[in-house]
Amino acid sequence: MKQVKYLALATPLALFGTSAFAALPEAVTDAIEGAEADIATAGGLILAVIIGIKVFKWIQRVF
Image (cartoon, rainbow, N blue to C red; front, side, top):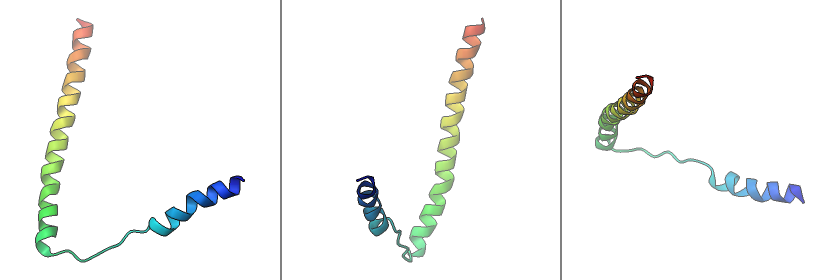
């Protein structure tokens, strides 16, 4: 019975779990590459805010 469960789980993954690659126009590739820098900057700012809040709470607890 366990084998049937595993087979039932593995079959859809084997059939539909493959990825497809297609050629993209250069404009799309350039836009994605340009967005990477913006996303990295936003992520860095969010991390800095979270760390700043945590440090502020630690300092409040000490004093």
